[in-house]
Structures are given as structure tokens and as C-alpha cells.
Image (tube, rainbow, N blue to C red; front, side, top):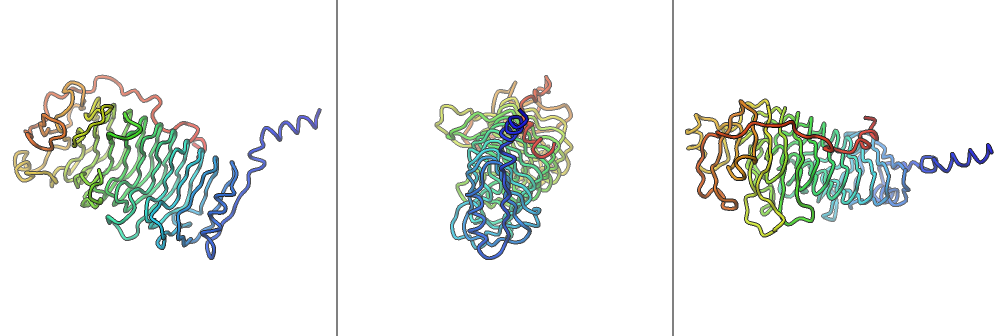
Length: 401
């Protein structure tokens, strides 16, 4: 009986007992040795990257569930893609329950780390840097989870992305926290995603700090249930360097937090300073579209109490001089384009000053704009319902809380 009990216990804990550690060091053959470890890993294994600089000439990929890739710190273990030959991402993950932690990628030719269809993925203390600074030839995204359920980005740092530093697209149950996005076109972007919590981040020196988007024509539609809270969004004044044709090429330099065509978004308790076009911008989709599933207007967006200073003093807008003159030298911190249901598109906490472009038709640009102070916008009428927003608790537990 004792033998049977021991055998049963071993079977019950088979994955931890059989899990292996694959140690990889920098130096000659690092490309082959690292990719081999990624291929040979079994669920539950850990791939440990020793400190040092790994000179890599091709992208890496992982397609095994439950693997952890662990480095010696975002400044200790560096995967250097400066001599990468292809144009793909540095690391592609297509498996579930993966943990990526404590290493960096520099100068990937494409995206930094992309995870596609990878549920319950953790990015922890990951750094992605294009060391030449902002440039349209840099990769589009630094950290790029897409089509996933369960995403936790924690303690990351990204700079130089020609689209978004931290981008989460077409996903559900997301937390982006404690991270720094600097000198990207968009610092942090949540696109066509639901139940996202963006908190305790720093977004600075980007073209736009934090963007909450919904776009037409994508497999997953209907973004919403997003909280943007307790972030430091300062000095987002880098000229837009996105390649022409990119959707974020239209982001105005100096945008702090922008919500476009999304449903149920809460923006509160953020500190915003030095965003010269608009600290907070609530707008409709700006272009014409044919997707019948798409709602181009903002809905149920709540702008609560935020600490805002030094914004709207140098707007990248048509007729900027006249606008500044009309508003006394500085635009009010909240900009709404005026489109959407006037009774439910936007709720604003008392004391938050704003202005409207006074647009009357979606997809026509600024044609017909009638700028005016924002008045008669309803105040928030109910407590924002937060249940189910953010990454699953199991992901937080994997990091130890």
C-alpha cells in the first residue's frame, strides 16, 4: 500500500519531477544552442540564459507549452539582433502558459517579442530597445502579444518602436503594469481588446503616451472594458516617426492618453504633464470604413479625476495659433471630437476642463469643425464595474503575487 501511495504521488506531480533546466551561455554557437533548447524543451522546463551578450543573426521561436525563459536581468542578459539577417521578430511564441522574464532584446529587425495565440503568457522584466533611438526603420512593436486570453506585462521597458512599445491586440483579460515606454510612436497601445487594466506605468517621450483603439476589419472586434489608472504620462513630445500608411502615423505629437472608438473605458488617477497637444483625447475613428461590425464612436468613456498640468500649449492641430488665442494661450486638457451619442459617449468628472472640435460627421476629418468649450457633458453616474478586468489571478500568482 505504501508503494502504491508513493507511485500515485509521483504520477500526480509528474510535470515538476520531470521538468528540466536547459542552461545556455553566450559565445560561439549561441544561436544554434539557444534555438535547440527552445525546440527540445518539454512542458514545465526552464531555459536559463546566463548573463552576457548573445550575438544572434536570426529570429528565435518557441512552440512548447508551459516553458519559462529566464535571464540574469534586463541589463544582464542581452539578445543582440543587430546583425539579424531576416526581417522577422526577435522571438516568436506560439504556445500557452509561457513565462518570459529577466532578459533584453536589442535591435531586432522586426518586432521584439511577438506572442500569437499564446494564452496565459507573462512578460516580466523584459527590455526591448532600438539603440539608435526613434527611427521609422526600427521594428514596429517591442512587446507584442496578440490573439491571446490572459496577458500579463509587468516591469517591462521598451524604447524606439516605430509603432507601439507595448502593444496588446485582439486579446482578452490583460494587465500592463509597472512598465516604462519611452521614445516610441505609441508608448502603450491596447487595440481591439477587452478587459484590460493599464496601471502604474510610465509613458514618456513618445508621440502618444497611452492609446486605447478599436479598428475595423480585424478578426476580433469590439474592444472595451478598459481601465487606465495611476499612470505617469509625461512629456510625450517626440515627433511621429511611424512609417507612412501606419495607423499610428496619424497620432498627433503631444498626445497623452487617447481613446478611439472604444466602449466602457475609465481614465482616472493618472498624472499627466507636458503633453503639448492634448493630455486626454476622446475621438471617433477618423477614416471611412466598410466593416458592418464596426462602431466608430466612443461609448461610455469616463474621464475621472486626474492630475493634469502643462498640456495643450503647443498643439499639433490645424489652426493651432487661432485655437490657442481663443482659449487664452493653452487648450483645456480634455479634447473630444464631438462625435457619438451626446448623452452616453463621454462622462466627465466635475472640475475637468475640456473642449470640443464640434465635428458633425465621422470620417470627414476636420471638415466642419466648430471648436468650443466643452459644456453639458454628463458627470459619471455610477461606479465603474471592474470585475473581470485584468489578467487572470493565476498569472499574478505565477509571479508570486
